[in-house]
Length: 129
Image 1 (cartoon, one colour):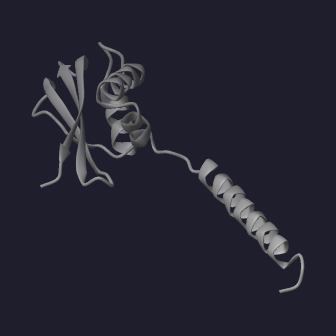
Image 2 (cartoon, rainbow, N blue to C red):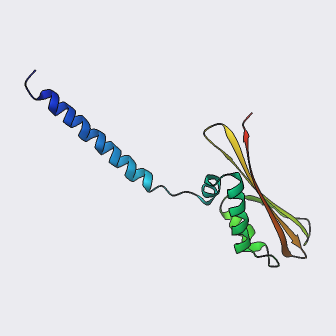
Image 3 (cartoon, one colour):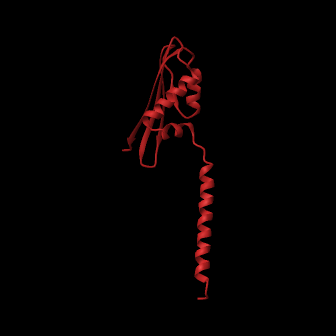
């Protein structure tokens, strides 16, 4: 082996490793998260509280629940309407994760006479069967 070959090989290996690291850092930094992923990253309690806060901004108590329902369906929830002008809008989304768990997010919007009377939100995580 010629003198300096090992040193050049190590230097080339370090340069390649740094290049791979920079590329992965740049690609990973540009990934945007969906609103549902943002709620899930906060955990079960904090994520449910953040969802309730957002629903209160989209449709305050005493207002039409329509804007909140539209926003929830736009971010991935499935919503079921009450039978009349009073009742509960049930909005649910289920998200599987890498650890074979199933996360369920639920928002219940209580409507009375066509206006929003209250909101209850929850996030539950269960192991997949």
